[in-house]
Length: 242
Ligand code: URA
Image 1 (spheres, protein in one colour):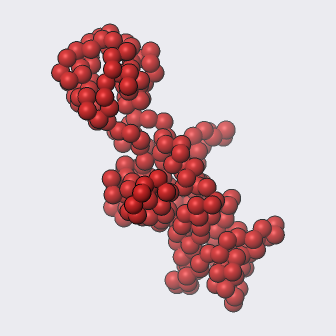
Image 2 (spheres, protein in one colour):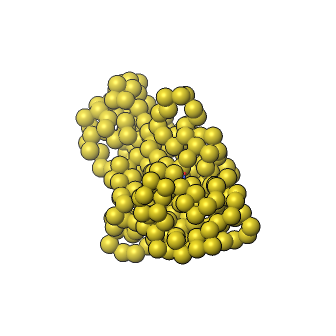
Image 3 (spheres, rainbow, N blue to C red):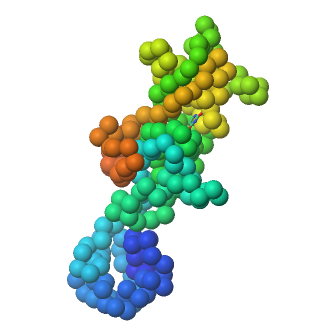
């Protein structure tokens, strides 16, 4: 791979900026100063350093964010609202990220972000049926047959039938909802269809990834190798189950 391409990817810069950095003799490959962007390197084997600090070879970034309320799950917002991508510092990921699916602005909890478009597609594709788990606070009384309705497929107000899901009643006004699809405002609309109103929505799981209880709200970290392997196993991108 060309050094300038690799550098642009790893330090989150344009090729022009990379050229400037190279001309300033700030980059070494295997200990030698390199000025030419066309220099061939072997990702993962060549030791590339910027200003003396070794740059880690990262194929793709997958980040777990503990989303707070009031932040939009998007890369742009026409109203200028705060964005989830702005909560990921460069020290966690220097590249542009996209959210994997969405959490409503008022919802909290686990949101994955990545620079790997194939992964976004694999996790969010309806056929994959990736499991999502939500802690749901609600007002009002759920219909007596609400749990059965979830098991057989809730019919939303607009007539859409959801895939079978699970409703576990935890305490008065608190339930756990497990779904295998990602329709717009899905959990809120499912709860409305069985007679109650969601007042709080917190996601704790996406596929095999659990929200890290040690990750404070508003903070992000990269997935561990074990978490990445588990994700690849459910999205069919690895031969073995993780
Ligand atoms: N269901 C919703 O209603 N909102 C979310 O953010 C996620 C699932």
